[in-house]
Length: 131
Image (cartoon, rainbow, N blue to C red; front, side):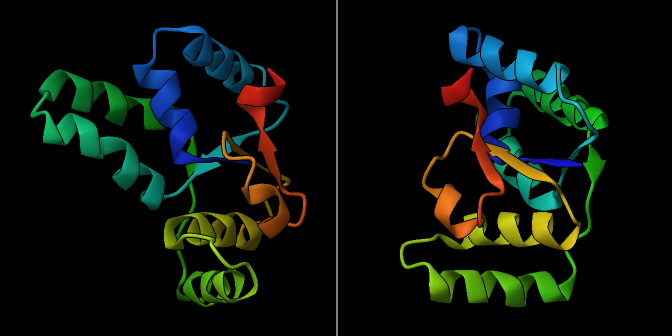
C-alpha cells in the first residue's frame, strides 16, 4: 500500500501543467493500492473552501474515491511526536502523515517533499522529481 501525501492529491486535481500530468501518471501507474488519511483531506480541501468554490470542492472530494482512507489512531500522534523529537525541523503535519503511513504498514510514502526522506527511514519517495 502506498501512502499519498497532500501535495500530490492537490497537484493531481488542481494542476493543469507538467507537474499535474506527471503526478496523475504516477498515481495511475502505481503498482499497489493507494491510501491517504483524513489529514490529507483536510489539507486538500482548504483552498477550494477558502475560495468558496463548490465545484472545486466537489471535484476534490470525488478524488478521494481513488484512495483507501487510513484511520489516524491515537498512537499515531505519539509516533509523530517521536519523529519530530528525532528530526529537527520536521513539521507536525508531515510527522503525522509519516506516522499514519508507518502504522498502516505502507511500503512507500509518495510526496514531492524530498526533505522527508531522512525522517521517513527511506519510506518517502519524491515522485514528481523522479518523473
